[in-house]
Image 1: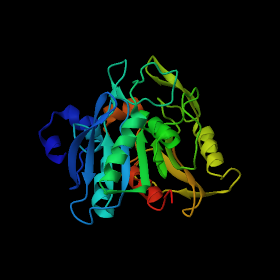
Image 2 (image 1 turned 180 degrees about the vertical axis):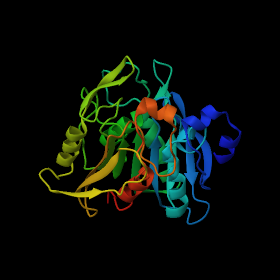
Image 3 (image 1 turned 90 degrees about the vertical axis):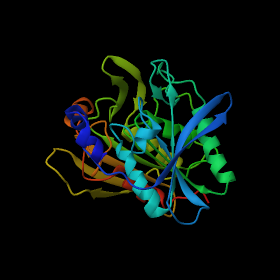
Image 4 (image 1 turned 30 degrees about the vertical axis):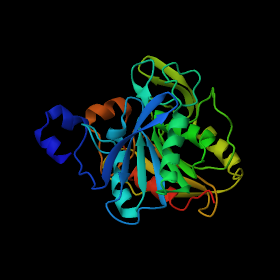
Length: 320
């Protein structure tokens, strides 16, 4: 990305600041799911034992791509920080590619029945097929499956927590909450959930309500508190006390990051990472969006690395 910024027009660098990509290996694959051929990118460590690793499914947002989520394109997502984690922690990361909905934009068939732009694809079946392929090859520990998604991808991560078999042990949802008018089943098993959300998100309201981009209405969602309470009940943590943590602030922006943790690493856990005055964007210490982008989505917090927070949440979670 550094070399791109040296040669690209000023507009590119106004959209996103430069960052250096990690060295994990990335390969593109296709898989047949029903009548559809689906695509994903698999990031693997450059060395180490080839069997029984944890697997993270990575879900881009609406309009996004799997390649962008793993560091390619003009605006590599802050989720690209997973490439460092892949090498350091010996983890596999599969970035799944969404299909186009009725608006001609890539996305996911999440639980919103009132969003007419949703693709009709069997995304749960697609995700399960990728997992099953890697488990059958002996490359993945079926008890250590995790999902991280941004925006529409975050909403899809909740659907995978509800419906995917084998079930993920934990998910991380950034700038996305659960459908208010849901077409999905209720949770069948405990799943640990990390929610990262800005209070000033202009697309997916922190308190719940209408998801919107400009004049387009994209369905109703529950707020962060309602989403939290749903998973606290599912995970047997309703009424439990929360531990609080405030991140040290970096930079000159007005955002502040804090976290509430329910439960412990020895069992199901729910964490709410709130970005006060933060927008519809992944907090990141390394991958910084430029002013043109943040003018649309709101302020990006720089106090933490979203992918690193997700891995710290995931690494001790298991369905055993």
